[in-house]
Length: 103
Image 1 (cartoon, rainbow, N blue to C red):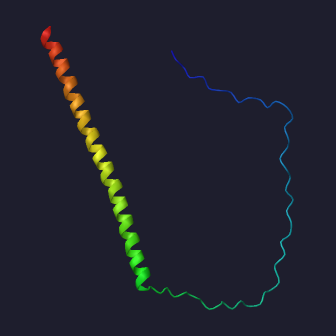
Image 2 (image 1 turned 180 degrees about the vertical axis):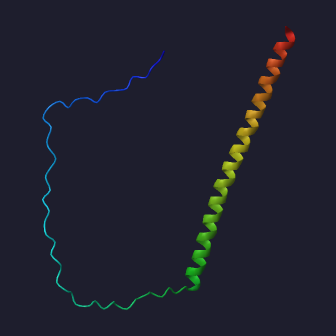
Image 3 (image 1 turned 90 degrees about the vertical axis):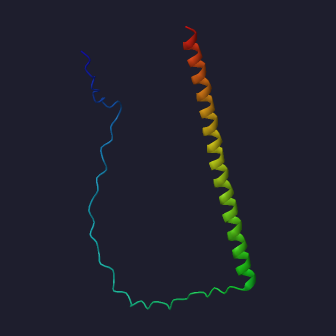
């Protein structure tokens, strides 16, 4: 009945360029290098003053409040949408039920 048509490989049109030829080259070892002495690790010391600690706490609180507000508003929008869909479903159900009772 229905058989799939398998596409055939199209023949190239125009001039086909042959692949480039790669000639191997000899690898010469690098001359021995002088031993490298690692530099001492420098770690800057972070000093928290009362002002910066208060600023960090304030910024963290602001971030938590903003993120919480956004999440709660998204949850509220979802709940309102679900309630409106449920009300629409009830109205459509009652309209369909009344239509069947009239016949």
